[in-house]
Image (cartoon, rainbow, N blue to C red):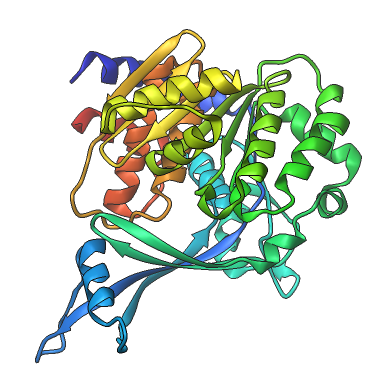
Length: 369
């Protein structure tokens, strides 16, 4: 067992009791995810094999250019989705009291996939849920989303769902706030601005963590990304603010900010985290990949190897579980390495089991890696 693993296990000692006095607030999206494998071959006995990786699918599509092609999709699982609900559910499994805000309804009632969360979270729905077909492969996933209803998520909808006084109370009580999936929510930047003018100035002085995951901003305009990044920087007045990115997103955000990063993989991740954090002047930036994760803070940077698995049982939601583990270690007072270690362990457990770990689960898992 490594020194870092021992330190992380030490951080988790008595965590249940400490977390019972804290609270998290997570939002603002909501999706129903169908986890899908693309069929490769059907055998004579009816057994099925699946296309293993994304290049193999790309070759099939490329070969069909100018013709046509058919794919059979096999739904493996239908589950709760969205960066907010997945992270909220993972944190609730860790025994952190959670309020989950988002578009979580179906015909004005809570959608059935979110109902199991009711026993673990306070749920506040702002509108009708969205849907994602997640095509999973051993080396990644293709997310096909129908998200028109995210246009319902506005400042006015937030106030209607919560009420202005309760909204301040929710933020006041929260030791951890996560506002995720900016890319899918066209009015998120406007919501951030209103939070900064109407809620944040009314908060008491307490050490609070804000976690933001933009979630693949490739199809948003550079000027809109710039606007979002400015608002993230402004949150640093009131919160210990962390921006979470995967490697692809780090390249895109670094490009928008004019960061010229040299090197690949681990060097790229660590250097990108350092440069983006410096540009935004926030407390932390994470860049995570399937096999490792890096992060930078005001005092330095770190990189931790993950418990990589070549054939994950599930990959959709892995990043959200990393975020949950990282944030949990943060509010427990962990240093940068401990936060990364708990992040990669939480993600590693999830992709192997398709389940969110409890604190006893993650302690046992840490002892094995």
